[in-house]
Image 1 (cartoon, one colour):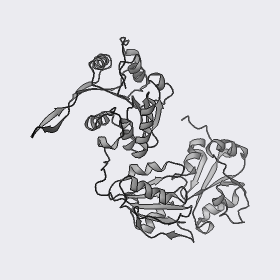
Image 2: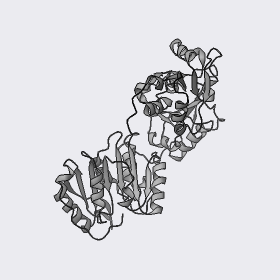
Image 3: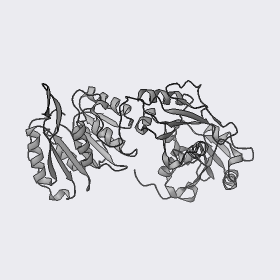
Image 4: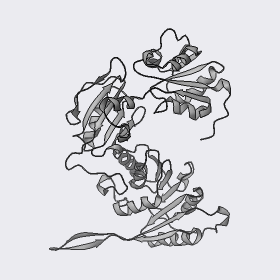
Amino acid sequence: MTAAPAATPQDAVTVVGIGAEGWPGVPEASRAVLRAADVVFGGPRQLDLLPPECAAARVPWPSPLRPALPGLLTAHAGRTRVVLASGDPMFYGIGRTLTELLGPEAVRVLPHPSSVAYACARLGWAREDVDAVSVVGRPLARVAAALHPRRRLLVLGSGPGTPAEVAALLRARGFGPSRMRVLEQLGGPAERTSPEATAEEWNAPPADPLHIVAVECHRAPGAPRLGAVPGLPDEAYAHDGQLTKRYPRAVTLAALAPAPGEVLWDVGGGSGSIAIEWLRTHPSCRAFSVERDAARAARITENADRLGVPALRVVTGAAPAALVQLPTPDAVFIGGGLTAPGLLDACWAALPPGGRLVANTVTLESEAVLSAARKRYGGELVRLSVAHAVPVGGFTGWRQAMPLTQWLVEKTAPEATEKPAPATTGADTP
């Protein structure tokens, strides 16, 4: 994202948080700002909470908001502009959008307690022990990534039907015994908390539009257990055989070393397991899975939704051509197509200093490519071998999987010191 231009006084915008209780809950400092405003922007519900003493022009947000926001603010430049927001504007709110657009120096934020703060206070839950997931303008599938036994979730609802949708998702993911409550109009005179019920028996009527869903997670007996670290069971994925298996996958993710906010290219996505488990390490991570087969690409999307990371971007196309428009990666995984002309070199060229590249193969032809790449760029070659105990007549023996060769390298040298790439022929099937 490009840096915001330097702010001038007329660029300044003040964002004021307001709760369901409306004007009575607004601190005096925030009231003074609203009284002095020439124009107040906000959603219709927030604007209706202002009393007559706030004489500013009231401008409701258009939909969609983000593309219209720069022009809307410019149209009122030179006036005292205030934005009204629900609760804490910097918690899944308009505050973040404005600071990204105008720069933090041009935005003053006067927060109100968030709905999550109110919910924790009402439930007696310590905020640091609660996972908050917003589905306002975001896929409900995001909730699945937070499902772990005995964890507590607060789901910010996107509409009256959200509680029933959350209950259905919990049942579908094997968390039907989880206990649920809905907290409505938190902090306002119409505040209400629903009776507790499990997701399996949930049949409450639609909720007030302003609500939050509290969930205490309990896994059903026999439901698959999905841990918080890479190496999910192979059964967690739908696939046609193109799957990086559980133990090599765990080693591969350890080699890729995801960190918050980093971007992964998963080239030759197959079933998407590497990109999906990269995203599950932290909600701020991003990933792009490149798969040339349309059926597999669709399956990757399905796996990502089921495992709680619907933000995975799936690119249907053959690499390296399909890589051209992708953002700069922090790490690249090549799971297939190593002998495709130009693929490895394109991935290497895209990496910034400090970026990591990991490539796996089981074929001699691709292994030769990795050996040559190691001579040019350095790094480490590892041979992974996994065997499973299986019945042998009335006894038990080991069945060896195909050995896997892995190359791991971190880009530290400038491009100018690299030697020209040798020509490659043939093509692997990703």
